[in-house]
View (spheres, one colour):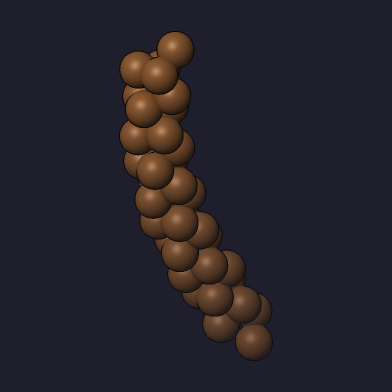
Length: 38
């Protein structure tokens, strides 16, 4: 059970950093679209 928790926590950290990367990329895409609309 403890091992599973450690594994899960590790995965969550990776997922979180992936999400933050995706979020930045998405924000960049949105900015690009907004700029081209202006």
